[in-house]
Length: 464
Ligand SMILES: *Cc1c(COP(=O)(O)O)cnc(C)c1O
Image (cartoon, rainbow, N blue to C red; front, side):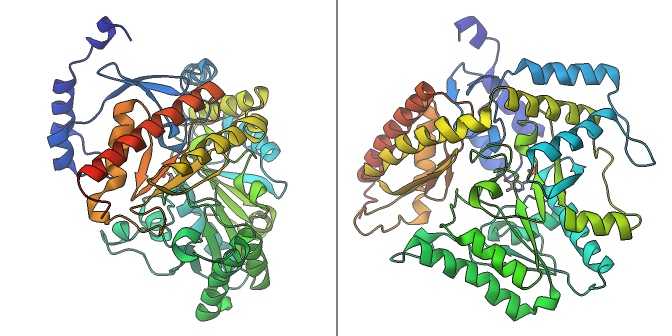
């Protein structure tokens, strides 16, 4: 970026205006005001630029969503065209808009075959709220109104509305606002590094899925409506389930007549090298939540893919379903989603992830496991995570109070790569279109950041 371009922004003034009036999500406003926000001004491909002119490789695809990369003219043009044609009309009172009709139709082609019906929301959170209401409605229609309880997992992320945060398993969210709401139970996550050291992955997979069966029996199967999980947990730190976990979950749900819900907000639309994560992991959900990648984040859109079993009951026996949002099926959002999915098909992005991008990311990312700070590194599709440890031999953790992950994240930012810290788990989920050369650049920057973090840790005496 040229000096002229940089000089367009007065960063200090922007930071002051930012903290004067703008309350950020998931942010300590006072701490942010002291530090000043990094202001992102532009994006192209896998890179973003900040107001100081730094070019940063976006290893997190914005927030797990900019799957086709920044600066895609097709998406911009689709939005512009639809804005001029019809910026808004609702779908409430026997009306419909063209892009929503077309999108629902196109989604039947890219989702697994049990999905032929789609409900639109503005976000993943609203998608999960919709699922809770829809599933309870389903069991009412089926004459089992007592089947209301959802089982979810600790350290899951399902969004931040009251219902979605309750389904999620984040204690720090539950603590604020008396959550979870009644009717939601949690089981432990399938995180082998934490809960299954010394076991084979297969044995741990069966054990972790078994926690669902125990919980169903504890509550009583006649009261359990559904199990919800992210195929691969994202915000919890890229927790990759052991092989066999999801097929065993499926078997247990079938056995007790519990609906299976896949929250595909991150894993949908190609991230694992299949259109949806459940295809990669080999299970067949009754409902799926989607958002993020459906528009590559260019405009808000979320929704629910409703499988035949639930759709049939709702449609043939349900009458009115008293739920929806002003912007359900928003024409501009749907038009952008259509352009995004068509672009992904035309460029064969999902196939490229499966055959090229994900295997290459894997080979390069796993090299980082040789670093003295890294206790474990793993990938699944275009999601990757590593644990920073105090002692590589014993895999002993750092004291969480030392926030070593945040030190590492800071170095990453300064070196020009965005990597997220979840405690001491460092994670990435780069745009699906990242090239080999860009992957090489990213891994190089991560390694340099790990070296600098190691220096800090040694200097501060944190290695014990
Ligand atoms: C981001 C996310 C959500 C919430 O989506 P919003 O659009 O932020 O409401 C739900 N589930 C998963 C798995 C997510 O990653």
